[in-house]
Image 1: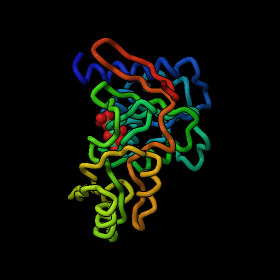
Image 2: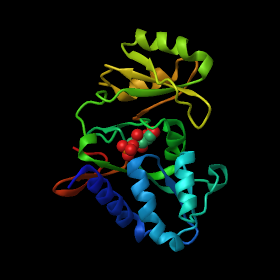
Image 3: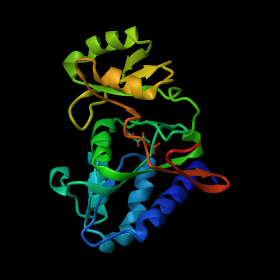
Length: 226
Ligand SMILES: O=C[C@H](O)[C@H](O)[C@H](O)COP(=O)(O)O
């Protein structure tokens, strides 16, 4: 199985995970990225079986709309039963780095409003310690240099992702060479820097279920994993 086939396989597994729980008035939270796109395409097959979806990015909203899936504003959706999304890295405690596609803030908000976070990922995303993937931090544009200096103080090597503006009109700083040995602590610490909108550590709200694709098939891991 190549990487795209693994993404397709985990997308199908996520649909199997929720298909018997769908209800006519249900609204589903949808992530962003290439793996989430496979899931959107799968979900479209069951669009008669639920009410609509909350998208975590403009890109996902466009894709959902193209499939004829009703878009729902998060403020009117209330608590969502499921949030399905990919990850850039995920560890054994189902904590993640997300935001490689700059969608981290909306993803974290939709995930925060969801009962069950189902992470879909191919095996290249599985790590022991988070931090090989550069950690994205969304900042207000005027705070870019200040936040960069503060990130250096806590051991990161920050680089501005030039040319990228998030759906919220902000900028992204990627933190290189930053081993996240205490993701919960670092998530709070980075959020505390003035000018930071959100960072890509998903540790306070980790995934509940991981569907991990490999050449052997799809493995299902549930939090807490031992
Ligand atoms: O901002 C983007 C998101 O956090 C994505 O979920 C993450 O980058 C994984 O994307 P992909 O499925 O394309 O690897």
